[in-house]
Length: 239
Image (cartoon, rainbow, N blue to C red):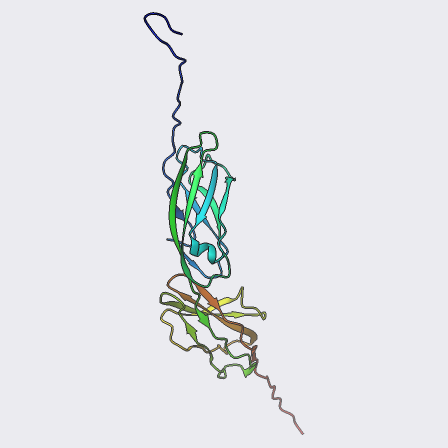
């Protein structure tokens, strides 16, 4: 509208949306983020700020993609309760990676305002320890007699040795056993001598752990059977 004194235009209103805070990444498990080979996923928690960031993407560097990481570049909706902060996201890790250092960028976005923030983190995948297996040969021992020592040889993989733990099990399995010995400063090889003070039949296995929290479990040993002593009754007879 124009008159002899003034010119007018339509009014354009520009709204600047309230923004969230920059995401704060906290690796929940494992920490810092030090992962162990074979892990297939781990949670990342981020600070949701105003609690309105409802979509995300994950962009990996070239070496991560070459190693099998998959980018989440479809701007996926975040599942879960956004009223609870920090908000968890599950990051998938290729289980075939033996070791390496990889970087990725997490992008969180408000689908209404379009406001987005990014945060980059580097994760380290540490190689597992290695461990040999105790002898598979069975042992049959009389109560309180000496048993044959069981031994394993281990390598640390990454970090330093933390422990070697020996377990007994009533079944032929290397899970769910009972802890019977812990070596806090393991040697190579490390050995355990089965106890023979109670009758019974047990398998044994070892678990080695390094300072990065990575573990490796041996196969079970042969069955160690401790047999009870025979009993004899002496009776007097008369002619």
